[in-house]
Length: 310
Image 1 (spheres, rainbow, N blue to C red):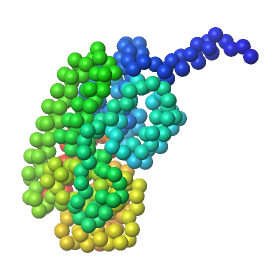
Image 2 (image 1 turned 135 degrees about the vertical axis):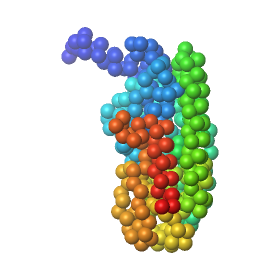
Image 3 (image 1 turned 90 degrees about the vertical axis):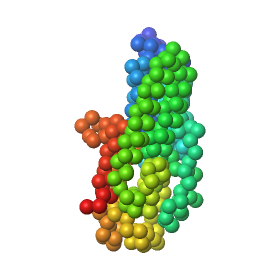
Image 4 (image 1 turned 180 degrees about the vertical axis):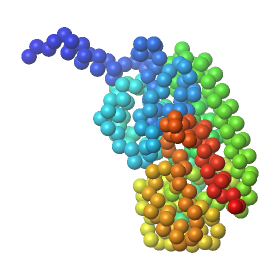
């Protein structure tokens, strides 16, 4: 069977897209960048600036713990030149995705070089120390996102040396914003006496935030860093006892969380349930958290307002 010239050219272009060099394959000589999480795409875009556009692999509102890539997602990865991931185990689908995608691309691990926190608060939370290798939610502490920015800056500079000066300048500017955000959060939290800085969360994700700003995680509804796990009746009973002992004021749920167990705990303890914390995804432009910086501000305000003495 003879193939038409147009079909042959289309096949060659597809092969070239998957085996292309690291940089300068787009019409305007910009590297093709893809970030897995939405918040990570925003952080990376601040480093890339007008040098390149960072696309998002995951849709807004999707939790990476339960993300299942589609064939279209595999194609996106195959065609990108630089893939930016959080790393630290949060993207459990990543190894298989990269194998299926093939192609030639640089992978930047934003969390590379950061050490996982020790999980130590509360009896229920202590059980998590043996349930996973570490807590990957570094991004909920903006001082750790400085390392993200440095890793992204260095990775982009290696992939696109001509843009290194821009990446370095953009990184300096964004790190200044992260430091200002850290100071702002610190000032907001000062409104709370230490005795009120107690948190019960849906799953173990706000540990770095708590460590940085003086909160204590009393316990979690789901006994794992992944919200897909399920607590036993004994674990829920232990959590209820801890809440009663400590006088924790509220249970904090992230977007997309099933509120059923939280409501059950609230009925037993009299806690209020605070919904809609954004931890794994930013919102679209019409939402309250369309950027990483705004996501952190929104979460802080929500937490502080819920824990204030009324």
